[in-house]
Amino acid sequence: MHTVISTAPSAQLVRLSPAGKPVETFSLVGGGTWTVGRSDRAAIVLNNPWISRMHALIQRLEVDEFYVIDLGSRNGTFVNGRRVTVPVRLHHRDDLMFGETRLQFTYDGSRVAVPLKPELAAEWDRVTSQMKVRCLITAVVMDLRDFTPLVRQVPEELLAQVVGTWFRQAGDILQRYGSRVDKYIGDAVMAVWLHPQNTPHPYDLLRILKAVLAIQKTTANLHLQYPLPFPLRMGSGINTGFAMVGNTGSGHRPEYTAIGDTVNLAFQLEAATRTLGFDLLVGGTTHSHLEAGGLTAWLTPGQITLKYQPEPLPIWGSTYGDLQEFLHTYGFAEPPTQNPLSDGRRFV
Image (cartoon, rainbow, N blue to C red; front, side, top):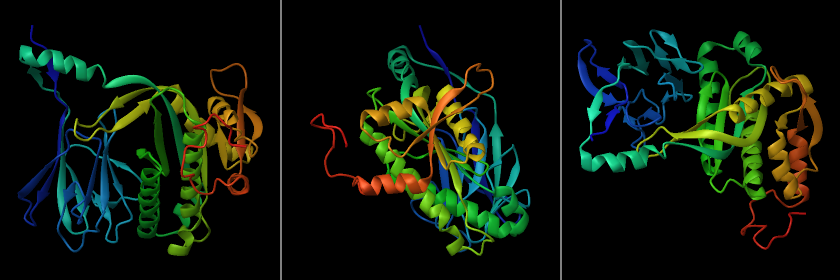
């Protein structure tokens, strides 16, 4: 019996001539993100001096919504004449400008049924069975503080460059520490670390904490790079737990995204940092795994009340300064050359 699958909706960017005629087409199928820029490393290369090397990013969410994010480009990204300062959702036939290069976003939301040959059916079933799995993850949400006052005090052009630069630098740091940006949402970044063995090593969580500190440092230094009225801050929520993890990319370029209560709680933890006066909050499972490695001396216990949950939820919080001091005091400022727990010993 033949297996029938549905292809992804057809989405593409069409580069237009000054007269509005189609010149080149870039497919947005078979992946989750596409970089746009002058660099040969970009997924969509636009060879124009008005284009930055890494100018912008097109992101597809798991619900088949497409967003464009400016990455701090010099000459800006525009959707229907409005400059992009935070992620903007794209709709069919939206007009985009990257510098002086005009493109049109087209999107056919329908899915096309494609019959599979019998000899390919078994292989497809094997692959698709792995597309969504229940996996232990650590989700990290980082959000810029005082963003509304910033919007009121700086020009739109400067705001786009600041937020885009923050997005780009955060993405570079996350990649160095074994993750990537899962979502750009407004003025927030979400990242996910997978724990394939369903038991995160304490050093895995230590690496996550170092990534957060590195992003905090670049956030605090943005006012040295741009004329901002005040230094920027960010709040962070870290939560470990099981989630449904799906591959939104292709076989040659897998890209994973996670959904579920674990991710939702990470967002709520970040939001609670404002009211509880912490820079960073971690959930109970994250705390348990840190405790297994003796890595909790920098944390202060607390609790939050969540909607639809009758009992308060225990959480642990800290400032970035206390975390930095802890890592420095116990010699964790730089990653160790070997796995610290390979012989079963604790960190401290």
